[in-house]
Image 1 (cartoon, rainbow, N blue to C red):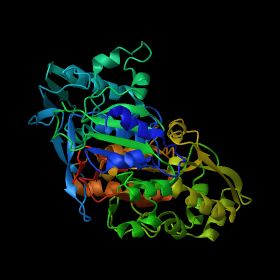
Image 2: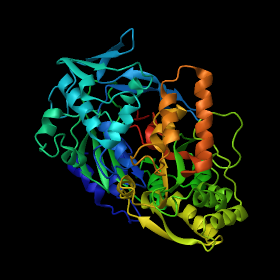
Image 3: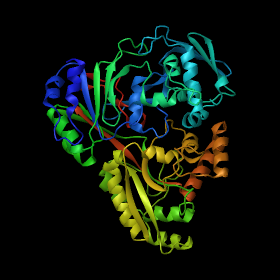
Image 4: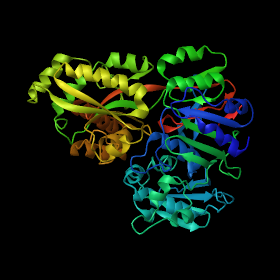
Length: 529
């Protein structure tokens, strides 16, 4: 099937009941796959303002990074990334100096971008400088002591060096994340301006990579057609030649297409459908709790959520068990209920239990005995989980006098609003790239980026986070972490709900399924048996 024929099968609108029969005929053979998901990407760049998690599925597969992560098997037979196994990607090799303050990277000499231009150390320099020019990227890179463009040094065309002020255990992992994508600098500079020297506006809507797949066709919000880049040198050539990723909001439509063979992989499976899908002989389901966490956000910079008693009141009013059962059919790992004794991992349950009388008492203490009016927002791309949460929250808070209007935000727009700190009260999901608790606190509980979801500004807490980062005495580190956990339990900047189970269904002949950060599909490992 040629590209024109392939694209002709895209005639289906998002509200259509069936997918084109044409696709089903071609889909039974060859190296093409069709993937359907609930949400839609809103950019081609990994750190554009307001970028959503679906966009990362594009950038992960279309761009290379200097380094990547290995894989580890999961109990269900599938695989996920091992964040403690760091391997070369665009870098052919790397060396860390004896004092830990220099890292030398040797680039693959035959690596090219999708337009045929060679990848050089100048491209790496441009790309890492670009990360530091972005508020989101700069905040993330700071967790690995990457704070100054002068640290990024071009040695020669295929040798690159990073200088560090001190050894940092998080430097190498940071280079394998979603932000430090290696951009075709010459192509980007053609679209740069004095006000936008890194061409961020152009890159938001145009890919400029050299990864395992290139974008052959796209309409953001609807579809992306990936084609394998056969000159890719940074890993084994993918077993799949072409992947059509299409947004289909209706879960019943996605599942109908999968059962007919019109789709190969379906993401965002509603929890109640999983048991039936697991019994169907032509299908298989990957399902496991992830490091992603879903939560209720309260903007501490907007009244009345700037009052800790209001945040605590809401935390005591919510019907956690009912929300978990209704929204996820209890498929996941709860982050509510009694706090575990002596556990220093994070996120963890913070002792949030349903206690409406305590909630009313706290509102009275805050001078809000009669309650207040507010709006609770959620992104439509997360509607299957967020809507039942919102309705149950609305009912529960109404019983303590808080009158809640529900706002459904068009897919992809909530991220921008959160970046601008304009949303007072909302449902959202995120994930910590790395697993250290002080890293989690630094990303989600300090600073001014989008990821500080509660807009939490506590100088004592921020100082503790900075202290813990380079603490070498383990007992002291653990004591500091325990103190930080107690502080967020008391201040309740956000209300943790649960780690959701990632449920993805696929045809039986699809092999090599794995997922990356934010539960997005890794295309490079896929094949058809």
